[in-house]
Length: 334
Length: 257
Image (cartoon, rainbow over all chains, first blue to last red; front, side, top):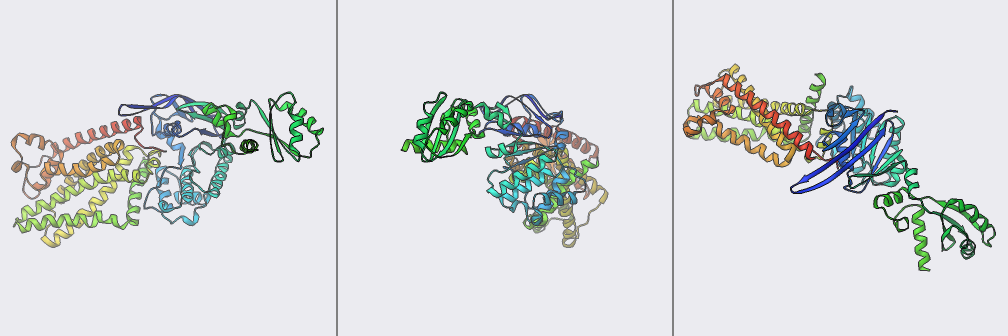
C-alpha cells in the first residue's frame, strides 16, 4: 500500500502585526492509501493549518508536505486534481441551485459527463429531491450533504474532511458517518478532523493527536487507549455490595473499591487480577449479575495525552469511565 | 488547453446562472448604465453641446464601461465567493489564478458588450448616433478590455490579501483613471503641461485618444498604445502573482476553518 500523505518536519508561523503564532511545529505524519486517518486536537491546535497546506492554499515556512508523492506547494494544481475537501465551516456559492452549483464545481474539476456525475453524487448523498433548490438555502444537514456531494464530484483519491458533522443533528451525523464508511469501502483515503471522539473511534483506522502545533501521539484507537492504561477497573453488578467490598478489599493488587447501590467498582493494577476477583466473588454471599472490564474511552485517552493529565483526574468521559465517575460521586454522597 | 478553457468557462457559467436567479443583479447591466448614459447626455444637450462633443461623450462612456465591467467583474467574482464563505472551494480546485482571472473577465466582457450594444441602440434612437468606424472602434474596445483586465489583475491581487477591502478599491481606481485619462475632454485642455507626460503614459489616455480620434478630436498613436498596454498587462500579471504567493505564505488566501 502506497503513501497518500507524507508530511515531514512542517512548520508554519502566522504573523499579525508584532504578534506571531506558531501554528505548526515540526509536524510529521504519514497516511497510507485507503486509510481513514483522524487528526484530533483542540481548537487552534493546527489541524486547519495542516489541511490548508495539504490543499495547496497555504505554503509552509519549513518542511515538506506531499500528496501521492507530489509536493503540495510546488505541484499544487496536480495535487488539487486528485483531492477534494469537505469542510463543515465553509459555505456554498450563492444564487445557484444544487444542480447548477455542482455543475459549476464539475467544470472547475474538468469532470467528464458532468450531468451524469452530478445526478450520481446527488443520489449518493440523498439530495435528489433538492436538486433545484438553492444550495445556499439548504438546512445545515442538507448543506453538509451538498458539500460531500461536491467533495465526491472529481472522484478524489484523497478526501479531506474537516469536521463534516459539526452542528448536525444525530440522524444527519449518523447518515454522514455511514457515507464516510462507504467511501472507505471504495478504497479512498480520508483525512478526517473532528472533535467528536465517538466519530473518530468509529471511523478512523489511525489517529494523530495534535496540540499547540505538535503531533503528540499517533496510533490506532486501541493503541492510543492502551497508552493511558496503568490501572484497570472492574465493574460488578450485585445484590449485596457491602459483602463484595469486604471480600475484594483485602486482595493483593486491588487499589480501590468503590460501592454504590447494586454496583461495585474495583480498581486493580492489572486485569490478571481478574481471576482472584472472580474467586473471591464466588465465596461471597451475594448474587452477582455481571462482571465487566471497563475500557478507557478514546476521549479519556485524548484528554490525558493532550493535557498530560493523570487518569484519575479525568472528567466528562463517555461510557464506562463516566459511569465510574458518577458512582464515585454517589459513593461520596453516601 | 481544452481543460483550461473549461475551467475558465466555469466562471462565466456561475455568473450567468446566478444573474438569472438574482434579478436585482440585472440592474448592473440594465439600469445603472442607462442612468449614467442619460445623466451625461442630457447634461451635454442642456449645455448646448454640438454633435461632435456629444459623440465624444457617448464613445467615452462606451470605453469606460468596458474598463469598468472587466475590472469589477474580476474582483466581484472573487469577493462574492469570499462573502459566501465558498472561496476555499474555488481555491482548492485545479483552476489557476490566470484561468480564474480570464474566466471572470470574460463575464465582464459579456456585460460590457451588452451595455455597449444598448448604448448604440438608445443613442442611435435619441441622438442619431452611429459608430463612425467599426474597425477602429473594435480596436479601441480591445485595448479598453486589455486595460480593464490589467486593472482587474491588480485589484484581484489586492483582493487575495485584503479581501473585501480590495472591493472598495475596485470601485475607486477606475474612476481615478477615468479622470486622469480625459474620457470626456482632451487632457491638454485641462491638465498642466508639467504632468501631461505622466498622463500620456497611461494606456487609458491613449485608448481614449483613439476613440476621440473617431470624431475628429485627438491624435491616436496605436503602437504606443499597444506598448503601454503590454507593459501594464505584464506588470499587472506579475503583481497578481506576487500578491497570490504573499497571501498564500501568510495564510490570508482563504481559510478552511
